[in-house]
Length: 142
Ligand SMILES: [Cu+2]
Image (cartoon, rainbow, N blue to C red; front, side, top):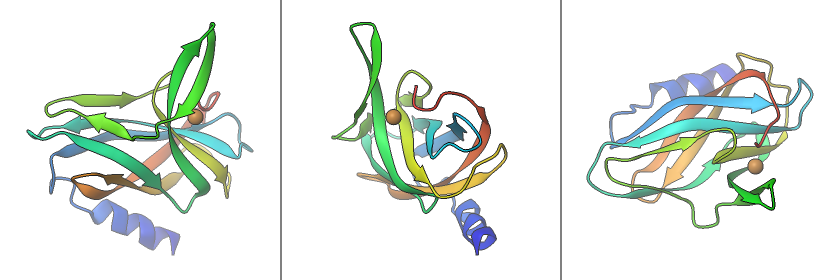
């Protein structure tokens, strides 16, 4: 079943809209972490703004959009309650120390190389399926 889901995700044509999802990766702090952080670059090649509203996956109990802010020299994560806007012709980078997807309550360990299918939902483009690839271990959520 898992292989079937991945095959479906890969078969989704990525060119049917103006958004490009590049290098989706997932990092966890340790092999037994229940929380992971997802990173990627979203490129908007169109002429219309769009907004990433939510992320869904079967791999974890929750998957939230988080930003990171500096507060008194301490990095704090906070939910992106209004989503993440992507300007026409622009790109948004999800990276350590900034925007990330917080995978909370991972149901299985995700050693490097693990494929984690997820569905991104945009205000205009609708659902776009992506596959996050787990890479090495690092503090999640930074
Ligand atoms: Cu976070």
